[in-house]
Length: 198
Length: 420
Image (cartoon, rainbow over all chains, first blue to last red):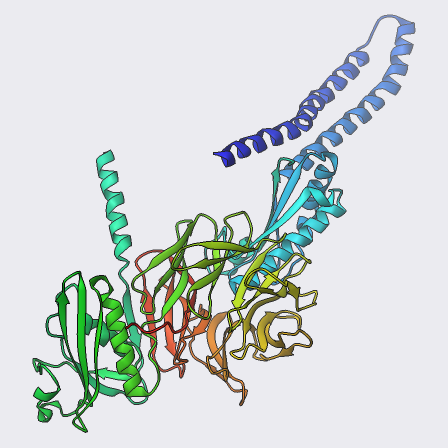
């Protein structure tokens, strides 16, 4: 029962943490079309000559600034979306008997490290796993190293040491049950999960 | 509808409680002694003592069980020796039931070649322990015929993983008589018997990470031995039962520690940046074997319990795991991962020769029977983890298939005090 409540709190806290970012995304996205509408109106021909001049100067300065603002807004929105997409990913993968995660997964760790660095209230747990090739105890040790190295990378990316705990399950709790490389590759992993501050 | 599902559930429980095992034996000893076990007089269908004795003897691969084919001498004196050509020993017995659920079994082992009585004993116990009586008889027969103590009365421990449930199980050496010491939704690993067979140390994740517990079999009481930050694992008992070797990650990498069984005097004995794990004591208690990747890949090393330099033992191509000494300390058995398969390998410490005992592809976690004649290990059959044994010469192999779940992490227990 306690676990369930804790789980619900965790979910709501995570939702609370991620919602400001989501709001920014939704508000910046409509901002871009608005800017372009303004530029369009200013570009419509007017009868007054002086206003025409102003309009011309407006046409010269405004569309460029508006385009830049639009581009920046779009870039920001894209970056936010990309960051959120990265934060959705919570698993990094490893080569056989290697305790440093794939280079390709580096940006996932960077995103989570930054996220933790921004919200000190957050606590995370890194769980390390191994494929079945090895003894259960060796795999437990290997999973521990994977978890510890992932934690180090999170700290390097901005998280505080005390925010992150590590655990190893070794070859237990495999996500793929096959006895081939595709299954093993999925099982050689470290998973990040968020927990509420104690 | 509900009634049906409840019934199905009960049915499952019953099947589970029976835990029938099917046992498949392959290979035979170099010389098989032909023996015949006569059905014991007075035994009923629920206590087929003579059948259990027969199966015990057959499993060793050292005996050829000859069907008595209707011949049924009541005792040594009524044996017509001329009838038993080709049989070297004959087991005759009788069962009497006494008040208060007591079973009394008297048996005689007869040498049909020398025409003499080799053994005559009476064993008694309560009715529920008929299998224990049978195992005890098999032990005595085995010892009289081979000169080596039998291990049929000893017990084994293992982990059964079934649909996300883990159970720590203790069973008879033939896999029957399962008793769960612990059930958990979280992983259980690395059971280790105390040298006197009264306690089991193991790793349980029930509190969210690997911690070491020690549980007493008779009372089910248990103590939390090690719960340092990180993983606490791989418990191993010193031969005198006073110390445990453990693996802790509290100082970063997995390292070996020794601690008194009462929790006193914890000290680190390996100081590498690499993985050191799976410690196991030598029978004299002076040194440890362990698995380490300090040389670049997981291999077996040996080291004095006082610490100091470790010596690499395994140089096979591939990775070596899970070492265990033979009871006489002359051999080391381990699991070798090479060319995509796990095999059980025995390493002669004097000649440094290595012999493959198995090659089933997924053979892990070997441990010697306390008489050194058999090695128990985990393997797989039809995608499920099962128990298997192999004779220490690699000739006789046996697989034990339980009804449900994956069986893993088996370990053979020590000799226990004889009954009577």
